[in-house]
Image (cartoon, rainbow, N blue to C red):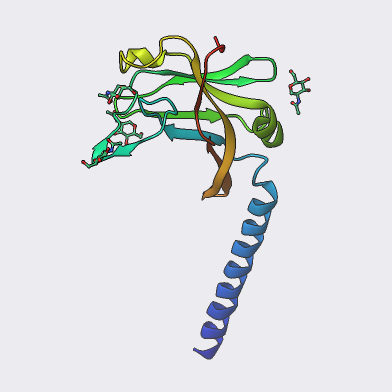
Length: 158
Ligand SMILES: *[C@@H]1O[C@H](CO)[C@@H](O)[C@H](O)[C@H]1NC(C)=O
Ligand SMILES: *[C@@H]1O[C@H](CO)[C@@H](O)[C@H](O)[C@H]1NC(C)=O
Ligand SMILES: *[C@@H]1O[C@H](CO)[C@@H](O)[C@H](O)[C@H]1NC(C)=O
Ligand SMILES: *[C@@H]1O[C@H](CO)[C@@H](O)[C@H](O)[C@H]1NC(C)=O
């Protein structure tokens, strides 16, 4: 009886040790293998953000084409906001280096603001650099989450 109990206790310790080892390997590989997510909500305003003016909230910007542009303007990825103004891009971490995404890429909304509100400009595009929002652990993979730092209407951007 005591022998069986001892065996169970050692087995338990062995299992715990294995878990720790796996977690450490996961930590080493994180950032290398986890996908990079770029998410956000786009609003129908000059800065793409929500404005709360006397209790009225800015509507979202649905069906807007959002591009990830890098370097001299190469389109690396693109998506469309859904009915709630939500956009979401998933990038392969092996083809996209985090530091160069942050330093050399930006989000560009190619659908003119006049599409969601006729009083807003039809010329110029919203653009925002990227920032690191956080990392989430999915299984052994650490997912890197990026978001817009803040959109701005650039009148000369096409
Ligand atoms: C908000 O409401 C107050 C009081 O009615 C008014 O004085 C103010 O101008 C309003 N602000 C905006 C941005 O509409
Ligand atoms: C950023 O973009 C410029 C212009 O395309 C390019 O020359 C430079 O190598 C890029 N830098 C990084 C870190 O990707
Ligand atoms: C838009 O996408 C978000 C996130 O996936 C989801 O929660 C929301 O319900 C979607 N809205 C519509 C109208 O599909
Ligand atoms: C449309 O844009 C104008 C100018 O910014 C603003 O005053 C108005 O409230 C907007 N309309 C809606 C429905 O958001």
